[in-house]
Length: 387
Image (cartoon, rainbow, N blue to C red; front, side, top):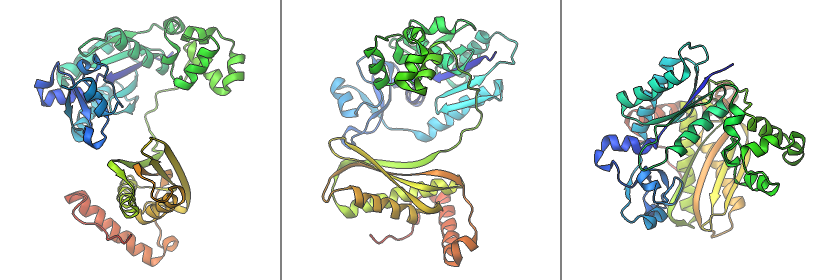
């Protein structure tokens, strides 16, 4: 029998911004992009949430809902540092830590003799006392129920301030705990699945648990069997201490729609440079190049192509992405968002006999450029580009 602790930092970006600027405390504010640049809300204070503002909302709409909303730009480096400090506290409890995002993690505390509720409360107080960061915690016999416990506690404590909820589900009572919750709270139930479940009279997690598993499988395939097991509180996944990088990507939303071919090609070059630099930093190379486009009406397209061999070089990534752009974009079509990604990743292996002497020289040059950019910033030097 496992005991899993799930920690979620409450409105993490906002909490960090309040540490830098205490005058924000209690006020409606949002962290994200500027409205004139088509920015979106990355996180918002609980005072803002009470006014109907939420993450992923366009910042322009958030300002219409709350004209006095304070907009704060992202502070990525300080968020990363605070996240690292929180994760250090988790690792001091157990080596079995699975970080699933910058502000969220699972910890396996099965081997600890102290009651799980006491461990959770001490951790919650430690994060607050030492870092002044509020967090909510769920504890259960598996990851699914622990995460749901955190979410349930936060909803129950919803108000104008940070919830700092703590919810413990006793072993053997998983299904009982889940049963009254709406089906949408079950891990794996998105809007489309929720709509299909409502169509057959299923509204709660308990309804899913009572529905014949064979009929769910007939309607949803393997996902139906998973739904049935999850609704009964069954989740056998262990806490995983390693995370495999599956893809690396970069994208940009333009402040104004872009129709100029050269401008789009140049933007693709910049994004390809950033993706390639990240690949080399992680000592990875990938075979699949993916292009993402969004038109002004929010229609979103993705296309991909396969390279002859895994690459971490911007020129090869850019060439593939540019070819995809020319294939899929009608002449003169304005673009709202453009992105480049690389997947099919593996460890980069660069051998001169595979690449040839000229390519080996290019790689040595690229290594020198990378070193300069790491030390002095990415704008200090770059290769020339002829569109």
